[in-house]
Image (tube, rainbow, N blue to C red; front, side, top):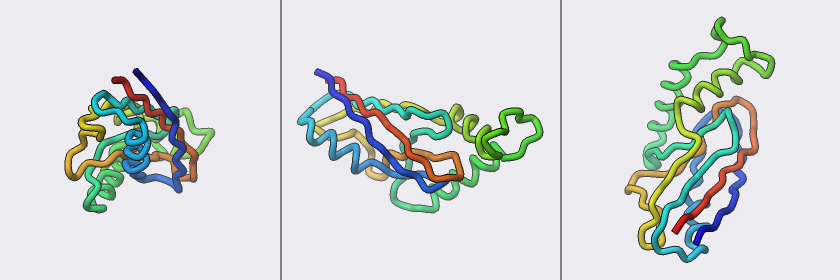
Length: 137
């Protein structure tokens, strides 16, 4: 058996947006006791990650580190028509993940105590993002 849905996530600029509860609620409704949940984001300027969901300073440190690693306004960029954050957003997306696979054990995502699912928005402006969740039993 397999099933899927698409989550729509609104972002308000760069940062990590947790959607663990949304994913878990959908998985719970599917009544699947064991399988794999595949997640895929349908965009080239954001990504997915599993990260700490307890201390907000971890998210801030990650965002600051990635912005330092991939700065805006690099003179080597030629893809600049959509603004100074566009090419860095594409680079950040290839350095991180656009898909994840997580086991489902006893009807729940097999995440650790401090792990959460995040959409990592790499653009400054507000965006509407689509994340496909697909369960394979």
